[in-house]
Length: 227
Image 1 (cartoon, helix red, strand yellow):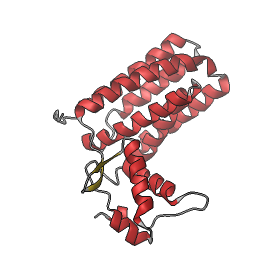
Image 2 (cartoon, helix red, strand yellow):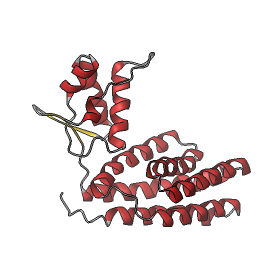
Image 3 (cartoon, one colour):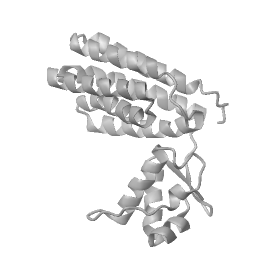
Image 4 (cartoon, one colour):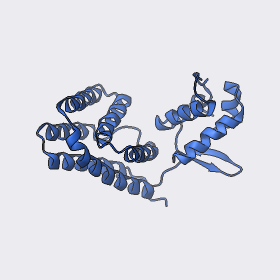
């Protein structure tokens, strides 16, 4: 049992215990503190935090619905392991959604909105220069979600977010670092430049090229087919 799981959970008011536990466990899974295949120890969480197991189990069920946890009868909850085949399928769906959203979003990018995206791009570049992977991943997520959300389709944004979370599980299996950071910086610049030029076709094409390149890097991780 890792210390990261048994640390004391912060329990703010106005949220159910199950909601708080869900959010904290999700954070730990997405940050790699809980790795694919690792058990979520209900007893340790319960004992350390003085909680009953009921809200922990409810949180685990929600994590299962979100595609981050697998509950095995008579064994418990485990962080989900994403196979290479599943990751490839998720990558393809992510591209399809992003291309559609980008075309819908292009008209919504006013000058102030483009300027905000450019500021995020600069922050990404700074994170790369400093080797700050945690900030890179957070800012990269913000950059792409700004495009997705500009499309104005909430369900699409929710599905896209869910796919990214599942792919994050495969990333933790595949590698710990972040290969292709320089390529990512170049791609973000090209995306912003296309928006600044008002060229919708180029903007959509740059988004698609960037995501397909990111998908290739992820799938070239060397993990053998396991499904």
